[in-house]
Length: 231
Image 1 (cartoon, rainbow, N blue to C red):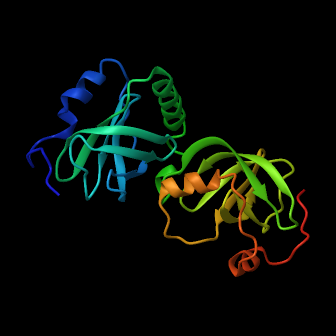
Image 2: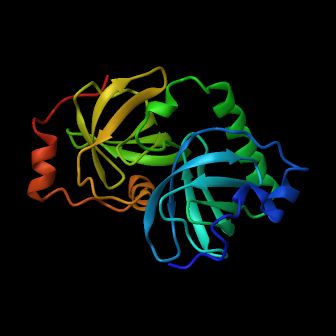
Image 3: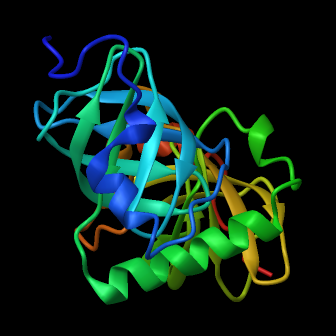
């Protein structure tokens, strides 16, 4: 891969991002992140700083300039953008200038700043704010509606009533999962299927409304005992 910026350049000096500073407050938040390139490669990174109009990320394999990328930033969410500057260790991204999208990102940034010391830095994977409608299929065959509050490669927080009990296996969209905690709004689950997933696939499959094949051995093994009721 060939980057379009000299090695001694500083991505923080990006003109496009620099102009953005006059409009949006830029926060230094060391948030976990992943990004999907145009080639379909998903890579890990860390946010150096971020605003409602753009972000700078450190990574071992920065994408080329002018590439479209999809960012998955811990506590912020999924953001589509364009690489405006890059070097051998970092890259800068600008977001589409849609007021509604920038307002949503600004709201998530405010929440992230207020929760700066909530232990997010200790998470190995970025947790993406969702508030997405989904369906859950329980062990006894019942289907329930829920909302995905946030999601990561390894699990999700669901708003659901009544709350399934701890230890129950269920299907979220097309993702097999297990209830590992309960909270005021619902439950937290961990995914029990393959660990070789991309973030985009997790987002798509968890909110899928397509019927899940319940005849395979993997489904039966994951669900274990039948007839456990939600509480």
